[in-house]
Image (tube, rainbow, N blue to C red; front, top):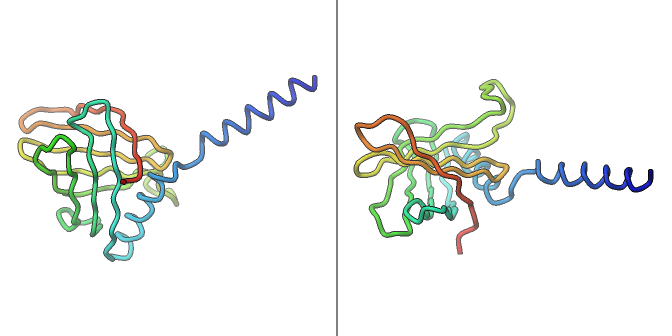
Length: 150
């Protein structure tokens, strides 16, 4: 009986740890939200590592605005491809409830030659990157990892 109680306590503790925010993505998302809400400048960057080297890179943002094309940011691809400029971003809410008091992440949309690049950063550490080529429908997304830039 004692082993079951200890096992249950460990399971509940580890489950709560997995539900916690990831410091790398959470701090980045919070900084962007604060800057956008206050219409202030910022200087943030986040490194994205993907299984597809062509999607890996660094996202640098210096101005965040909820208005389209008013933000200043760039995604610099590791493979040396043309940089993608930040076009707009939007908040992600729990259960897509726009009336929620807190956000769970953000989706960023970048324009690039031949299409758009999408980056979704969730506060829990989930990261997705995707591309949509001009003239096609759908976004091809892959799961990636965010780390602090060196």
